[in-house]
Length: 407
Image (cartoon, rainbow, N blue to C red):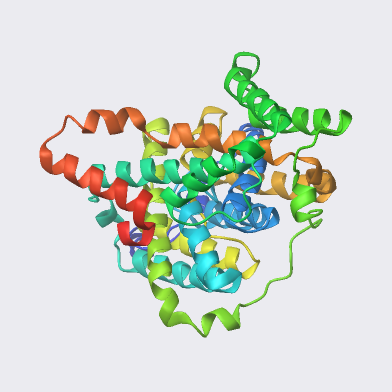
């Protein structure tokens, strides 16, 4: 029996992972429900992790490492019962910019510093403060990020031979128009077919994820008929079978002064998205997350992701909602999701090289549509002028200038 003073101290503690409290009275029925949800979410996370890695300007295995390592740590140490962690669309823009300006070592160093910042935010009990970020700001961010990610997928979606794309939004679209003559009909047709499968497959089955069906079918068709489409293998080679050894980016850390801005942006974006996701999950299960514990858990997840060569991670709203809808009720589901991804990489990783990039681009187009929150954006345009001004300034800064400036 724990003395009441110790019990009170624990209840007031800033770091109380949900895993420890949800396992009381945990039974086989709970395990079966969590395991099923975890496997389904793991299957959904596979194409998303690869796609987010490529869209972020790094190799696909870095996206997978993030989903596996950070996903496991978020579930083990976080403050939400059902949160699923991993790479998300919100980070694509900022990660791409950091890699472009500071290289992969710089990104790893910035992710390490962001993890430390998140832990300090949790210890300082700032979890409750994040919820006061104005709604027009979050909508402006997410809508702007969706537009930027969609724009980055146009070459892979249409098979354009543009070479490296400029960072500037307007210059990027000017380049696309200049190279529209290089459009590859086979790529367009395959991408359109993937989009149709992703959109309409839920009418056939909700147990088997549409994105998995799309990439498997696209890979088979492209290989069977020798379609002239670019694949993961032609651009990146085969994926490693397993996790890389942990390393520290000493070269990147030597430039910590110039990376503190990007690190702060990662931490702020991660804290907002993870707590927003946890709040959405609370409304679905009738629970209540521990915001400060969640920030600390997210901090450790980013530290672990960086050490294993991953990219920034946070709570993923869509995957968390999928977890809840499929019966996940404790952090065990999130741990199973990470284990499922690791198993797929170990057993089937060599076949990932056959996945067409246009199929991954199609998946991201659907992600961007849902991420855009266009209905909320449209509704906010009828709000008071001050809200409209905040919304539009945040949106256009994100699209036309830089996400760091917008933050």
